[in-house]
Every structure is written in C-alpha cells, then in structure tokens.
Length: 165
Image (tube, rainbow, N blue to C red; front, side, top):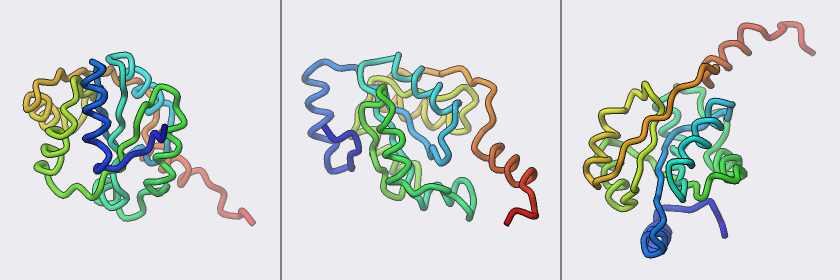
C-alpha cells in the first residue's frame, strides 16, 4: 500500500474506508522541518480514530504561509518523512490551495469523521466551519511546549559560527 496519495485517488480510498466503517481523522499542515511537536501532535491525532490522513501543503502554499525562504524541504520529501511514521495511514499531497473554498471542497470530498487541530491553531474557526460542513467532530490536541520550525530556524541562524569553512 502506498501511503502517499493524490487527490484523484481520494474518492476510492474514502469509499473503502467508509464501507469498512473506519473512523477517519484529518489533519493538515506544512510539516516543513519535522520536529517533536509534529510527531506528538500526529500521534495524539491518530488516537482519535482508526485512520489518520495528513493533508500536506504544497510548496507554493508553504512559501505563501511561511515566507520566501520556505519550504526547506520539498513536498514529496516531507511526504516521505510523514509516511515513515507507523501511525500515519495516508499523506495527501495537496495541490496549491488558493482559498478557503478550496479547503472546503477538500473537506466535502474527504468527509472525515474527525478533524484534529492543535489548541491555539490560527485557523481554528475555519476548521470548525469545515467540520460542521460534513458533521465531523473537531478534536483539539493540547499544544506542547516545543520550539516551532520557525523558532528552530531562528536559533540556528543566531547560533551559527561565521567562520565555518
């Protein structure tokens, strides 16, 4: 089974999962530089259901959301890392998503039973709307105190040695 999938494969997979009465958990994000906070969040999200699907942002969306020097890692490489986690069932390679309507369409196709978010997620209200749209439960995973990717990059930049040869 290939865990990395594209949108055109989604309908068949979802139909099979629903037929088998599997509880589908959807999470989304950039996952640019995988760190412990990502690992912990995904592991907690998986505990909310049977199947964990990670909707992985495109490189263009990461650039738009995080800045011109991001992503550090291309989408396909990020997908392979995420697929390496045993508790991740599928990694969905998102195309460029340009508006909330694009995410709304995705949610309608996926029809997850649960949408998992981190407490304090900046998109919490939108994700609640998406959950309501398909009668999904919104599960909030507590935020743990670990550096974000942005924090890690700042630390590296501020602590590198200028005389490295």
